[in-house]
Length: 425
Image 1 (cartoon, rainbow, N blue to C red):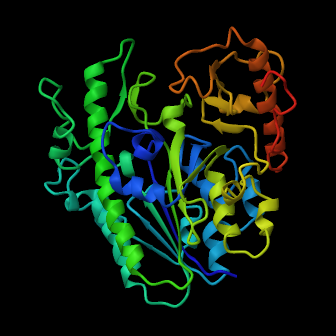
Image 2: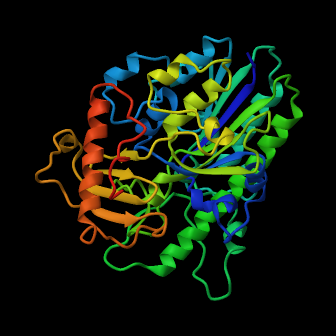
Image 3: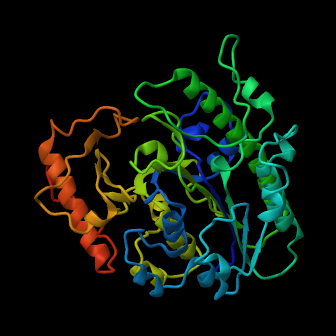
């Protein structure tokens, strides 16, 4: 059995569209793009929930957030799973609000308080290495370089990311402005703005530049972390994962920042890159529908000679199978939910419906909300609602969500094919 070291970096608020490997040309992310060239890239990774607890339930339990909580007793969580197999497990985070239901199972927890509270909330860093994100990554680099034990290790790095302080040097924002453009954002507090009836292009531009500056800080931090990892000799090598916990709205649907429960793509679509030590999937990418609950089974499967038993009980799948064969049978839909909305996504469609969480279980063929229906992937920004034009598709997707939800209520994984029998979808 291989004994790869494992490093997972979860960055909250990191949108897929902010990286060059996902099409961004507005600003440079050279270190992240270099890592993407060494990795297997998942083009269509979408968060299953808007709250961090739901996201981390998917990451650490491989359970969809819509599953009953009783499901959590059925399997080991991620730190327990690797700890029982001889791994030293470490959690490094600057987020004191990170869901605690599994954090206590890590062998070591560090990096939070000192890094998060080093400066007052109003302080802006003069140098990139003084930013809150850089201090967190410095703690991760120290942990990598100081490790002397012979046991393999699982290191989980969680950064508040774009939901933390936007304290990058002001010069980074200035580098993205031309003469006559709106001034840079001075505050280091992340935005949480509702824009009202009319979009404010100046505000969108300002905060987009400020967001970009924080991604540029992340890019430099990632460069330092990869240099630390690559300098440490490891007999079996490293599995390295970079994934966004949640996306971040930048004005697409009248919001800048915050948690938008309406479940639009800018809040759900995140990057997911995996660098395998044997080069599996290098320079390859997959458009298959993936989510956070696929991560645990993927790294578990990479360490087992046979398919791990965990795959029979959870909602996730091993994405390495997609790197080995583009024809590997995969799911045909993804569900997401918040306290006020639900959604279902396929390769060709995206349906979101405003529905209070308590009504999700009670949904039936009568009285269903019409919702918004978007054509994918053509309508990338989910701007053209075609629900009134494609009522058959809307009904089929609504029924598919209801059917999939019934499996979750019975503590069963969602079937791979929930809409495959519908000609409309």
